[in-house]
Length: 233
Image 1 (cartoon, rainbow, N blue to C red):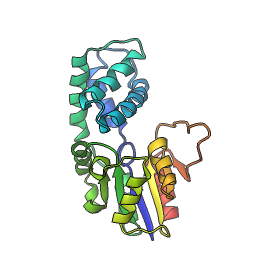
Image 2 (cartoon, helix red, strand yellow):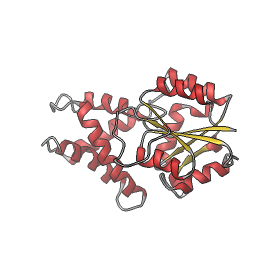
Image 3 (cartoon, helix red, strand yellow):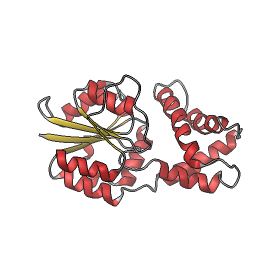
Image 4 (cartoon, rainbow, N blue to C red):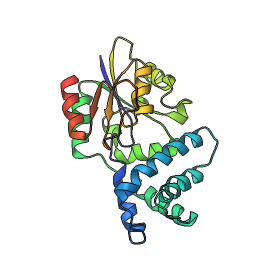
C-alpha cells in the first residue's frame, strides 16, 4: 500500500501569499523594506517562538510580537507592539481566505484514488483546523486521517506523532509512506526518524543543514511535486 501524508503550511498552500497581501496593505506604505526579504526572517523567529508556545513557555501574543518585531529589528526598524498586533489581525483574517491551487487540487484528486492520504501538522487546533477547513481538504483526505500536534500530544519531529498517524491510518512498516513538508528539521528529519520516505517541499530554496542526510526527494514548486508523485504513486 502507498500513503502520502502532507504538512499544511507552505506545503498544501503557499504560506507567503497572505503575508505578502497583508504587508502590502499595512506596512509597505510606511517602510521601505521588501516583503520578500522580511518574510523569511519573520519565519525564522516564528518557528522558534511557536515551539515555545506549544510547550506553554510563552503566549501566542508573544509569538506574534516576536516574529514581526524581531524581523523588522534586523533591518534597524523598531515597530510598536500595537503595529505588530494590528498586522497580525489582518494577516490572520487573510489566512482564513486561503484555498488550494488548481495544481494542488488536481494532485490530491489524482493521489486520492491511488494512495491513502493524510495530514500531520504542528500547531494549535483552532488555528490549524481553521486553515484545513478553508482549504477544503476533506474533499480528498478523511477527517480521521488529519492529525494536529496539540491534539495528539506530540509535535514533529517527534517520531511519536508519525507513528500515531501510521497506526490510526492502518499502515504497516511494509507500506510505502511518503511525507511531504517544507521544514527540514520538523518534516524531513521527523519522517526519516519514523522510517518514512521524505519529500522536501522547498519553495524558498532553503539550504539543508550541514551534515544532515539528504531528503529522499526535493521539489521547489507544486508543479514539481505533482510530477514526482505521479511517478512514485
